[in-house]
Image (cartoon, rainbow, N blue to C red; front, top):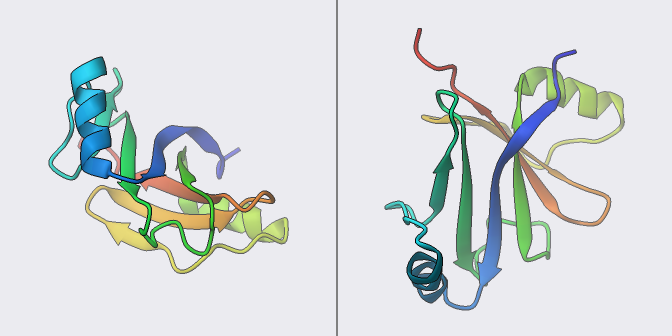
Length: 125
C-alpha cells in the first residue's frame, strides 16, 4: 500500500542557543554540522538520511504547534499519504511545499506536535 511513512527523516528541537548546542554536540559527540545548521546522518541507500536540527526558541517553523519538538517522517508517496490522511478526517497544515530536495507537507498530531512529512526526490537513474 502506498501513502505511508517509511522512515524518520529528522528531529527538530527548539533550544535557547542553537549555535552553542550545535558546538556542544560537535565537540562532545563528533557530529558534523551542515552549512544549514543540522547534523546529517547518511544511510546506506542513495538519498537516505536523517537530520537533527537545533533551532531558536523563537522560531515559528513549528507553528501552529506550541511544542518544542517537531518530527520529520519520510513518505513513500506524499499525494497518496495526503489522500489517506484526508480520508481519516485529518487535513494538512498549509500547502505542500516543493523544494530541491523533495516535497513537504505538515500535520498536527493529537498531542499538538507538528509533523513534517517529506517525500525525497527519486535518486537519479
